[in-house]
Length: 193
Image (cartoon, rainbow, N blue to C red; front, side, top):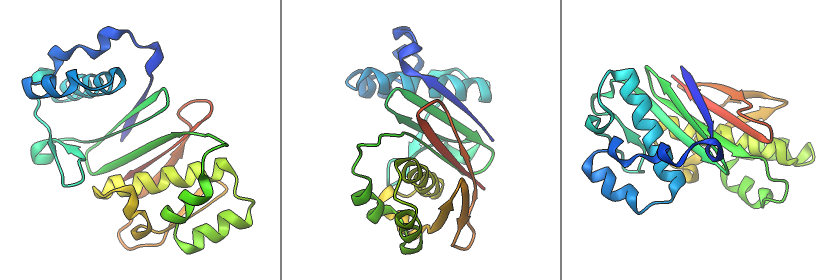
């Protein structure tokens, strides 16, 4: 498994070269924000490099929740972006990645109740409910649901405990979780089979 992180503001506008995309993607992404176009183009370039194909020839499918995939699962990947940072993760088996900018002013308490299992919520609240711990937990929750091809609103179906940088999953068949720091002021987590 490996992942790549990009600071979007450091990339030239030509990084959003729509010729890298299939005709259908070109039409769709021409209407999207520049950051979305850059993300899709970087993904297609990296897939092309790894699969030894031209970027515009790589067709992606999506599941019922919108998670993109390669037909036939010849390579698994996942993508996440937050604020000005983009992360692409690649693996030979299912993978989920999430990065988050740590924002102390975010409505963490309200969100925590929606994504944390009761045991995790109790731990988080007993430690003083810090933004750092919340965003690390959020990344773990997102990585787990993305690994499963689900949505963040299903996060409580993938219970875990996060404490001092350590994760303990509480469900059978759970993937491996790695917490990482993609850049100053950000946290991240990746889930792999």
